[in-house]
Length: 102
Picture (cartoon, rainbow, N blue to C red):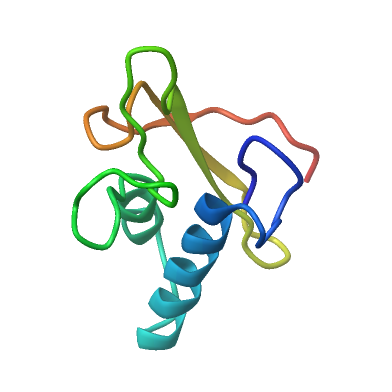
């Protein structure tokens, strides 16, 4: 999880919440496809109210500007990237074409 600081920094409330949500989703079933990850990026907190750990932030001076989700499958399968321009809860994710060596 990459936020505004060091990747996977569990001292950052937003990163800690994102990692906890990803881990919880993985315990229910293997995380497959983009939908579960995109839903996590659109998270507004446990009670739906903005807080220090809210992933999708809305604000006048600052907030979530965009979101990207990348799937890194096993050998032989293509890497996939999707991007939402704007708040993840409002924007549609679109596939980003990648030209990676095979």
